[in-house]
Length: 287
Image (cartoon, rainbow, N blue to C red; front, side, top):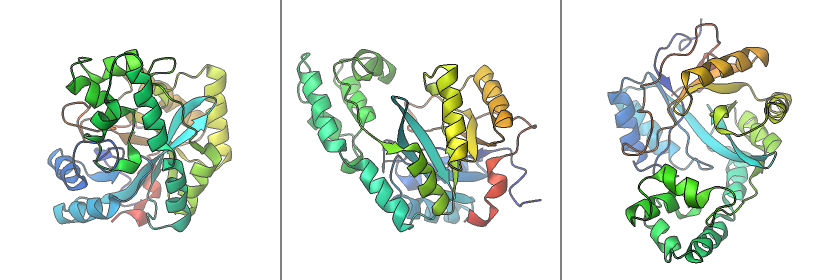
């Protein structure tokens, strides 16, 4: 049996200040260890520059670590996130693909700020920048933090409902990576591709089936079943989807911030026993 096959507390989805989290990689590592996480992955959006720091911190804490990334993908008119686990973060194709995916974020951010200014919210670009750890990765979350800080909204969900969803004043579409490219970058960098938090996508049953089918055709191997934004019923649904599509199951809090995240690192329920965990494939990639 693989060394990490039997685990009760793997957390394989979280973010640091390298993307849109509020804690440095070292602080996320310390928090994960304090919460009893037995296998941890840092999965910043479209960026792997925090991996070396995260790995060093995890090793110092004696906590097994997987290099990860969360890639933004355009599929059927929506943004879908694909997590890569156990990747070689120095792989040239992966690094270049992520660089290309990040491209255009600044222009998008300026257009978002212009939309907000048009409805009486000036200075949003500069305000969002104050919350950015990595200027290449300015995102809607950074704008949301500015709008809460400014008193325009009470919390981040309200910001998204009123200003940052499709059809709202601060929404600007961005063309992300293709699904097949993202899966290929992950696989060729030695990793396993996982569909992140599938219940968050407002797909029809037909579109969802197409996502899972195309993902599997491209070589995707896993799906997040237990994650911070899934209800118990949604976890049960995607457990069945994992079995139907013969996908490995992943577990991750999607932690961003002590003040904002729905779920603390390491606090999720276990995967259903009938599923094969994604980490069973990743022994050789654990450091």
